[in-house]
Every structure is written in C-alpha cells, then in structure tokens.
Length: 320
DNA sequence: AACGAAGTCAACCGCCATTAA
DNA sequence: TTTAATGGCGGTTGACTTCGT
Image (cartoon, rainbow, N blue to C red; front, side, top):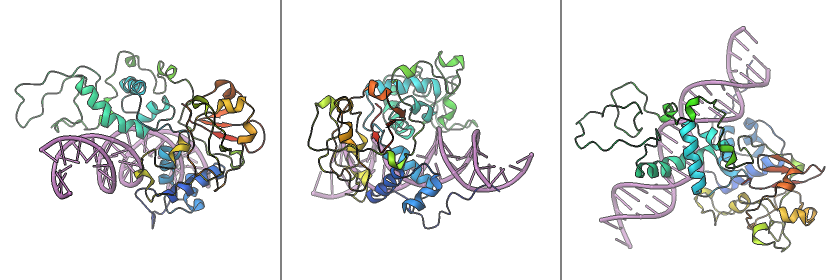
C-alpha cells in the first residue's frame, strides 16, 4: 500500500549546505544512475532528506546552471513571461535555459519589481500604476481597482488572499487568448535550445569531464582548462554558498560551456576522463561558445550532452 | 569604526498533482 | 479503486551581506 515515507526527518540536517555535502551529492548524482531522491541521501551518505537534496541539486549544483545576474534580455524575457504566466516561476524558468525557478523568483522580487515600479508599471498587473493618491484614506485600504492590488499593499478587509498567485488573470492581451499553461508561443525564440525542466541524473559511465594539459584555446572557444586531474571538490569553505562565484571552487564547473573547437579539432578523446574524486579542483575556464553542429551529433538532454559512442563520455556544459 | 537598515538569495515549508503499491 | 509517497511548485523565512548614517 502506498510507498514508504520520504524520510523520517529525525536527525536530519537543515540549513546551508557545506562544501563537503555538496561534493557528496554531486559525486553521487554524477556517479549513479537515476534513482529516486528519497534514496539519495542515504546512498550518498548525507544527513539530509531527499527533498533537500533535490532542491540543492536543481537550484545550485546542476552543471547546466548559468548563474550570475540576469542579463537585460533575460529580465525582459522574465517580464514578458510573467505578464502571461503570472507567478508560475517554473514555467517561466522552462523558457530560460540555465535559470532556475527559484533564481527567477528571487530576481523578480528583489530587482524587477522595483524597476517596474520606478518605471510606473505595476509589477503585478503589468499596467501603468495609478498616480499616487494625494489624500490617502486613513486606516483603510484604498479601493481596489479592477487591475488588482499590489501584494505589498496594506491588508485589505476583503477576503482576497494576499498572495500574488492570483495575479495570473491579469494579463496582456496576448495572454488573454487563454493560451494553455505550457503554450507561451513567443518566447522560445529568445533562447532556442534547452529546457531546464528536466534534469537527468547521469549514467555513471557516461561521465566525461574536462581535462587539461595546459592547452588553452581562444577565449571564445576555450575548452576546459584544468591542468591536473583534480576533483570537482567543493571543499574549501564550510558554507559554500557564502562564497562569491569567483571564489567558490564549484562555480567554474557550473560555468563550463560547450567546447566546440576542442571537438572539432579532434581533441575529444583527449578530454575524456573518468569521473572520480580526483578531478578538477582547479578552476576551469568558462567559455561562451556553444556549437550546434556538434550538439546535433549528440543527444542533448537539458544541458548535458551524451556522446552516442559507447563508453565513458559525457560533456557537462552550460546550455546557454 | 560601529551600528542599524535594507537588500539579497539559499533553503525551508506546506500544498497539490501524480503515481506506485 | 484506494491509499499514501513522491516530486514539483510557489510562498516565505532567515542568515548573510551591503549600504547608509
């Protein structure tokens, strides 16, 4: 009957992840075939619940995450998508490869909202804000207009829930054609490519990590540039998330981009290595290049390219 | 230099839809 | 068919950082 509980939550650790935990989780996920998240912490030797592991992986450790502030184009995209989808952050994120729903949500709440208000636009309705009332009523919420109120507005006596989730109906004409949740017709052309909704766990013997032998490629096509085979070790600080991107040894790997030139130059085999704990402690050079041709030869799965050749070949790269 | 306010964002909470037993 | 776990989602929290005084 049913399934076993996800976790008993007894003796489980909470709070920020340490570098050691990150390393355990990454090593496990990269080294094991897909299995249920419930089993991950136990098998990986983590005192976390599976849900926590999943969140950590999807929001922070996934190799295809872009990280960094959203660009202007991305911000615009978020605004457009939000106008159509409301606070359905995962849907929005699915149109923005390399970005997580959590990241977008945070950015919306901390940056975009303010920007829109400064521009005189209601971030909830995406319509012009009404001019400030020179005589605001005392101890009473201003009457709500049809366009709805801001969630930051003082509590209203109306039974309307305070959350923004109800913002969805407030939409642009485009969205008012009642497109299905999944159908946001315009936006995929901003970022043709991958959807980050599905992040596969990887087959253990499909792992290919960059290696370095000192070779460097031009900046736009830089391959992975580690010299010694060192491990993707996050261990340098007890709280990795407190590190800046430049300091955190995790980030270089996250920033890896598709090494097209390397492949085209026949360096693929040189770059193949088995994943193990001794890999890549050394920072890896990011490269903003993605090669469609080579990608076409591979099975692209959410920013992870699996070489069709049998063997231990997988390339981790950012899908940007 | 010290303190408090404001901003940022990783992580958690709780709900819901899906799915396995 | 029923039950309950799982995974996913959006909202919220709180630790940490940055800014202003």
